[in-house]
Amino acid sequence: MPEKVAYLGPQGTFTEMAAKAVFKKEELTPYPTIPNCMEAVNKEEAQYAVVPIENAIEGSVNLTMDYLYHKELLTIVGEVTIPISQHLMVHPNRQDTWKDIDVVYSHPQAIAQSHHFLKENFPKAKISYTNSTAAAAEWIKSHPEENAAAVGNTLAGCKYGLSIVEQDVHDYQNNHTRFVILSQKPTDFQAGPHERYKTTLMITLPSDYPGALHQVLSAFMWRKINMSKIESRPTKTGLGNYFFIIDVDMKMDDVLLPGVKSELEALGCQVNIIGSYPCYVVKDVLKSCGSAV
Ligand SMILES: O=C(O)C(=O)C[C@]1(C(=O)O)C=C[C@@H](O)C=C1
Image: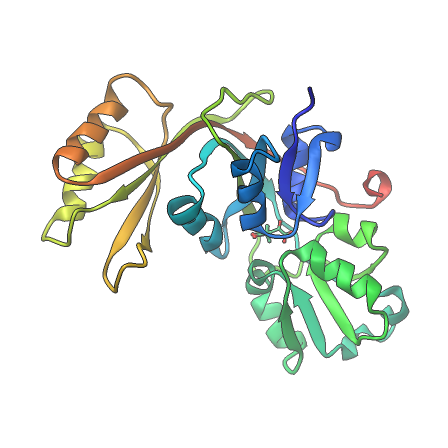
């Protein structure tokens, strides 16, 4: 039976590009928001969800992090990293007058990645946030009367018949986003050759005391486990209360990571291992229409 995969839509998002790298096109179903994608898996409407988790310029996608911790107890079964190029796109009617636009639509991550470009070129334009870059492109297509542009990718430009008037408007090169594949239960997800394995832990400290974080880190350090990411997020229970998200460069094993977990639990920490998964890296994404539409 084919899988059903919920991804942040509509068609033409970066998330769709990431999802297509590991799933068949027919398996993909767009959902309007990141929480909707995650809920779809929890309600068993879909077996998997693909959602963004971190961008190289703007950092973590907090909505995904927070939903994983506070709302939807899902497992990360895979990761896909793709290159990100943001373009400025207008309705074809505005191809020659785009320099006069007074509204720019896009997802907050895309706007933040293109902040300097927008400030330099459209200092007076109003910024209007959408649930995704493709939602911005779809809006421009259906509102030719608006003097507006969208920031998004080539796939969306092609799908919604927009004119790309300025390419690569993101402020820093080497722009990449990591996406996670989520499922209800750990599964042995495989989609061809992967680059490496990672394991993600969410750790809540019992209370704030001197050296607490140092103790947590030392449980990894003396076992020589390499961390590829550590980040704190508020537990939403009061100022100064955080949980930590830690990615380590290894597959779940029977000795080292269970050892870390018991050591930290003995210190009063709450430790959730939210996935041990293969990481896929996509080198090239769509650069011109052709197969996109
Ligand atoms: O809006 C999209 O196209 C998305 O897939 C979301 C998203 C994100 O949330 O980071 C994905 C990649 C880009 O960094 C910009 C936006």
